[in-house]
Length: 175
Image (cartoon, rainbow, N blue to C red; front, side, top):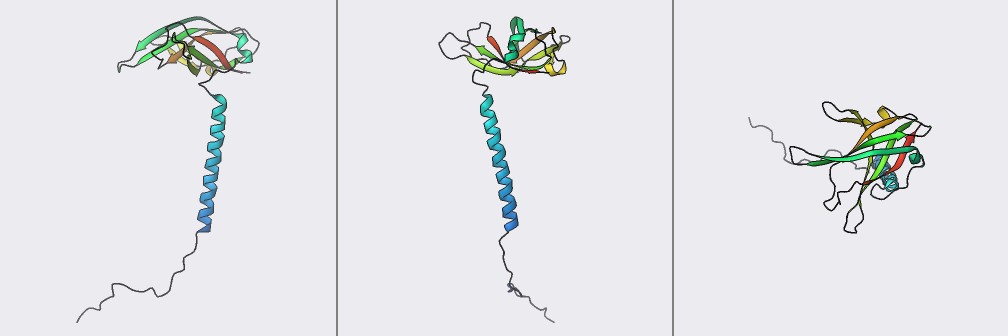
């Protein structure tokens, strides 16, 4: 007895009705609007900081003294070079300092604008078996306190004049 053959193509017994996915499009548009708003807010905040441009000194900077500044270098096994700027920071003001941001100007002798680095100050926690640093917030500087600090630079331009760079305190967190 021959098997019944099923047709290769069948027409659907009931026509399907396609509808526009209004809910999915609405949710997608909402998510896109939130993402765009976030990116615009982030971009606006980014432009206000401008780490590549010189910033004004923080008002509390007059109460902080940077002294004993010295430079050193280290080469890693992979051939990279790090430059260190070590010194002492003293809080001569009446508030406790929980964070300091500096701008460091590496000048050149070619008449070009200096290379500028903006970074937080890290205080030296230990020197043995190696120099270990931590943010100032981990051990805030009270009035009259003094600590050793270290700034680490991974890339300084070749045209730097090898003189001690200028260090400007541009932001201080106090409490």
